[in-house]
Image (cartoon, rainbow, N blue to C red; front, side):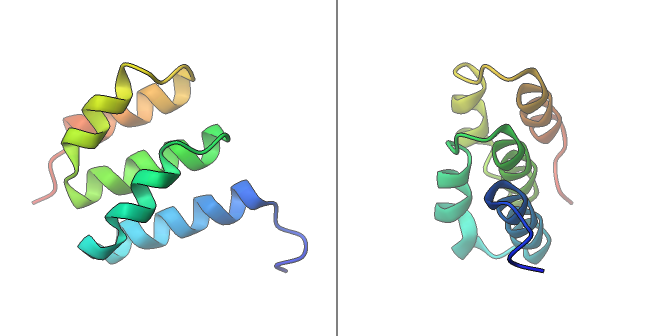
Length: 83
């Protein structure tokens, strides 16, 4: 299965897993993924960073993001506060 999956799909899955895990140790990796060349990885990194409460990173990235879907993901993550 790992031979069939593309890098951006694997990155998406890793971001979702890290977001669900909720461990602050994942923040550096998720911040790096927020700058990935593929929108799929950036969007899921934004979701995960929102889950971890890193709204400062998301707010800083929003102004520079060119992809509409990723901008929407960042905006949604900023609007949602994890309880």
